[in-house]
Length: 542
Image 1 (tube, rainbow, N blue to C red):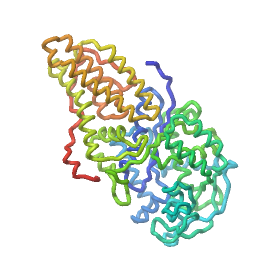
Image 2 (cartoon, one colour):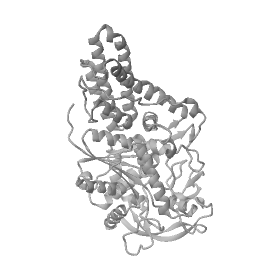
Image 3 (cartoon, rainbow, N blue to C red):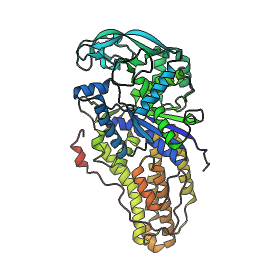
Image 4 (cartoon, rainbow, N blue to C red):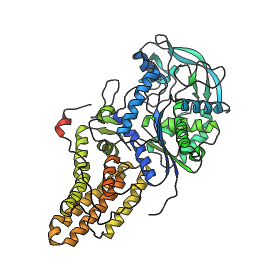
């Protein structure tokens, strides 16, 4: 295969709010980031896979007040839970941090101090939603009321029904989403960024985008066409990062203007640890992926580019937007408030992590909304992972251990199959880089099915006594297919692939591998256990 020059790759996974447990919708949206990271490392690229917990802002402060704890206690609790969940699912972050980390806060203050020197930042006094009962100002999303355009219930930042971008003061009958009390408004002076003056730059970004998902293009164009609005950079809230500007004591940086900067601060940590140049990663000769759910599109296609541009230090703008659609559960919308969800902390302790990863990569909301059902999950696991892939690995290697004294026989490979494997590396890599993970998985498993058919057609259980040379060739070929399947699947199924790679003594570099004849196989384990269908038929949620 043609050698590709080493590239600087940033993969930014969305930062989940540290005010409640993760559910399967989060995993479905974020898993592609780990696939990208593992693939690019296998290609020899310099990868910076970063993310963290979003610890500041009203959602955390509200949860803390409800539980009579401090915002730091709440955010640290969920941050630690998130770390464990991601670790159990095999997320290979180079840095998973939190926005309450002192290094992040230091970076953000320095970035904002430079940002405030831009002519795109200005001061303005505006009415801010205030709840007398909660004794505090409210973030836009914590004000609810009636949309003035369609007459349906909406949040203070946007109407989900008609898509209209709103301000809290635009709502009819605004109330506090926390306590339900009527909202009042108080004037407060804040710093604003003139996103409206960046229309040409943002339009050029989306018009020239390569590799953006269709929903990202559509959402971004809609926001631009409806008229970009300037956004406040500061807010009246104690829990957050202090504003590096005289006269703004007691105010903090608005959460949306600091959490997306976590991609910069986290990659800076990694750069310092490695002794690499952060500016190379954030310069022209790099590729940046941003992986998140549909709700986070404007933060990565409008807010982040606006901040990076206004800062004026030549930061690299987003290259590829990997934004998923929505995931439902058994035909219903996931609802954390109604406790209708499958919580990641529960599912990771009950099921094989590769099984969970496979389902969401092969059946997730990549290009359209998807539904998780227990029945389909069991069928996916038992039929594909166990019945196709696990079966091929087990039957081939067990046969060698039993009838060839554990030694891979010397043999010849089929030139056509070798060419097919080499092509599979190329096509799978292309699909991963394009964000077409479903197609990549489907292509590999199509080869798995052909590999099983090859084993059946060549009948080694017959040829071991009737035509030993043919049997040796068959088994040798099967071992080569297994070795390369393990490498091809490692970005998707890291745990089972790691086992197979160790059994066959191959690394995970992204090229065709050969296991020599005469190699002695170690003890082989069953890759996947069958899931009892009756055990999950009784569950609607975990």
